[in-house]
Image (cartoon, rainbow, N blue to C red):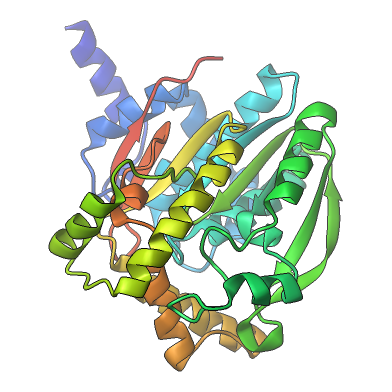
Amino acid sequence: MKDKDINYDFNNIFPKDISDDFLFPFDTYRLFLEGLSINPLTFYQKWSDVNLQFISDKYWKPNQKSDWKWSLTFPFFSLLENYINTINKPIIIGFSGLPGSGKSTLGFWIDSVARELSLDIKVISLDDFYLPAQEMDFAMKGNPWNVPRGFPGSHSLDLLHQSLDTFLETGVLSSPTFDKSLRDGKGDRSGWCDYQPKVLILEGWFVGCVPVSDLFKIDYLDQDEFNLSLSQSEKDYRALIQESLLEYSEIWKKFHKIWHLKSSEFNNTVLWKSNQENEMIKLKGSGLKGNNLSNFIRMIQTAIPQQSLSFIHSDTSVEINQNRRIIKLYSTKYYF
């Protein structure tokens, strides 16, 4: 009877205009919030406050769905606030999701709202640590997709290690910035920024990925399960990328937790990436298009085994469909 009473109380906390917008069983939402050590009633009262709603809505796109607000963004932000209030040392949260899944939109919202609320939270992208132009062109020369950047091996890992280690030791982060619209969409570094957050989020499309144990077997799985016809040059280059992933794995070890914005179907990123580049062209007048865009999408599909990208060892997983609607929630238990 006690459990039923708890469920009944929970079900009556959230109005129907919120819960009816969810595509997942409502009971999983209760378990999700419990896993994050979030009190549902306090959580709802806080985020339904008129003043906070006004701040929150300023940084959403028009007609943002309730599921993104109430089952991803608000819980994630509440978790970050809990860290600020309970942990007295800098921490890093990894955030993984395929290109176009919504990572950058979420990161912009978190940065903006944290600034308005004077909270020491900062989101940076793995992309900001791309190699400078000349080094990038040399490193990318001869790749089978003819892409200018994007896969493991295109980042300044020594700099990333140094920046994150310094942050964890001193609380000060020095990070380059990368503008993908420069050089006709090839991109280049555009400056440097210094931050002093208590909580740092590092987002990227293969954050948390580790090398597979049997690449030969995985090549066949990718071809059979995902209908990918890998060329020999792609297979050869995938082996090199696996070696690079070993180095990136040392970066992931610095994370306190990893969140995964998981795609229900791997090929959802084809549409997402296309839309993302079209928006960049509208906003900045430059971006990937035509064969350059097709090659980049092919790289996303084949550079890293899809098994690796689909099954990242995350602490929290939020699964989305092609329309970026949330369909599944999962979290390990967080303690404060």
